[in-house]
Image 1 (cartoon, rainbow, N blue to C red):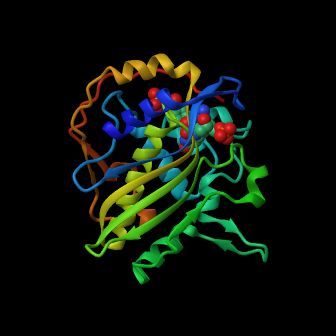
Image 2: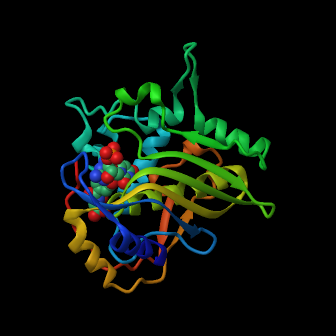
Length: 265
Ligand SMILES: Nc1nc(=O)c2c([nH]1)NC[C@@H]1CN(c3ccc(C(=O)N[C@@H](CCC(=O)O)C(=O)O)cc3)CN21
Ligand SMILES: O=c1ccn([C@H]2C[C@H](O)[C@@H](COP(=O)(O)O)O2)c(=O)[nH]1
């Protein structure tokens, strides 16, 4: 996946060295974009092995509106453990904002349902947006949303594209997960709307590499990218909430070995 390696090079070559909230320190740039074609292949990194199982369960967990790590842990996914309180709660993070955005008059908005209804009713609409960035509830979140807002777009040929604005991006650990997750989400929304997945456009605000990931980044850049895998979804699913883990089948994934790195908390 050349686009990802290009982002690594962009940050290494142009990044500012800065202090950050976690105390680790980063080098980073402000504003970048990558585009991934979803028509022929699935954008899962091949220059290190990615744990797709964690990514699938995390996406299903967001879509269920769940914000407690129990479901993830029951499925042996531990990526959110560091941020949870003693009861496993993360507060009003993604799942809450996507499916239960609270209005001042006491109502609740399911943005995912509205998104899908909107794409079906008015495909060429310019308002197919989901926002996790809810200023009124940031204080109730264990971590303010990094993948903050996304928009869908329908082409005249029936292709469905998605663009994400990510305000803060951990390029070595978080971004490979985010690309695969939004590619899957685009495929799921396309299937339930009777459209074909077309493109994922990833737009970044603060795009950074943590200083304790630099060796890992160099190792990754020394590796030759391999051909991308394919992702098949269970074609029977017609409602987004009906998808289960077994509905995602990855074919032809042949990555270089895992590269371990510490997560900045
Ligand atoms: N600093 C930071 N970076 C992130 O990417 C991030 C956060 N914090 N906090 C919230 C979530 C949690 N995310 C995470 C957390 C851990 C891994 C991670 O350790 N990935 C390992 C494999 C872990 C596994 O699948 O069990 C990797 O090698 O990709 C990735 C994303 C993404 N987000
Ligand atoms: O999906 C995600 C979630 C988080 N991140 C990264 C981006 C930053 O390195 C941290 C969040 O720290 P802030 O100080 O709140 O920006 O987590 C990611 O890349 N992807």
